[in-house]
Image (cartoon, chains in turn purple, green):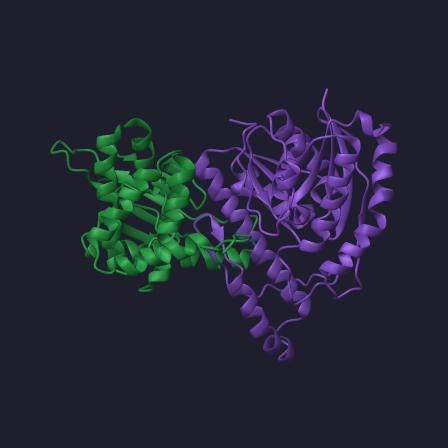
Length: 297
Length: 228
């Protein structure tokens, strides 16, 4: 039996979760919400996390009915993400690891999403689409309740093989939005709708291409944007048309949470990884493909 | 020849070969010759207007690029007929061909080196024609049967994402797309791919700028540390 506690706070969510051999024992979380129209800044986010982290930690232990002695490993998000929040959480993880005398494990946030997706959906060897909201900021409209229009406006669509490019579409909108809105050609909601349709289509297309190339019949969507019903709907239609299966998790696990770090940590710990204290720094730049996956073939 | 509903009737009688990411492929005969019909069927997940625009654009671009390649002596399937309404391209069927992907999986070092040599050459020639393939993978390169003299006859297919560009940046990205597809599908083939790039370098006068761009593009990507 292996029990791992995971600390996640790379963006505006602070979550701590405990996993025991594939069972989520607890997964409390708090979200730092800014006023509408404003993004979250690193130092304010770190302040938020500092204020609540110990409460969330206590909740995690209480809900799981465990004591520190019952934990086998302390996993935390090494990166990628925002610097200040990452440091805040890493600090607490390092401290409790030393207090409790348990080994530390630095986990890649994206791998956390993927491993949690695999655990929850039991997908065997899926093509994974990881879409994170924190990373694709739509500068044009960021209110949490975005009303969708219905008129489709043509926007640049850029797919290069299995990669997508968002830079063209953003500059196009920044440029053209003014003209289109003031001439009454379309509403802001129509632009939001068109942006969503275009961007999501690009994501579904590259997923389909990856599946065709690898001969995969399973798709797993992870990451905050994976909660989006329209994206799930589109991916579902694509899968249906090729006889593939779509796996998606719900908002408990799509959105950043501690249990996903614990789960990735569980896999890594059992295959022999450990992070020494001097290596337990954080990094804002940590690519998924930099991680050596030794726990799967 | 282009009767109303003609293509639909042809497809109904044709044999469905496969459904790729882009389109469905059917096998049929056209004017007595074995032919493949590439049909960009409507993708229900896309908005209808977006879908129509994409299918139209990609069909036209594909045909344009194939013709440009063929005129320059680069092997690509012959285009027999295009139905722009249903977004269908009638192409020569390369009977008995196999993909480079399968070849790599089943051949040894010496033959693979020869293959890498040829691929580098053909890509250099294509880029010298300013054709950017846009979706280079080992599944999009076919080996034509009938190579008793040992010379590998490589045919490029799937020009749906292709476009015309003289920019080293675009050619560099084209090679990068291939590199990523190559290395992810065929583990531990870094050395083989380097041979491909070396052959490319030898085969084109404009290769230096392209390969320099490839190095730059490799360093890009989200969260990548830009420290050299």
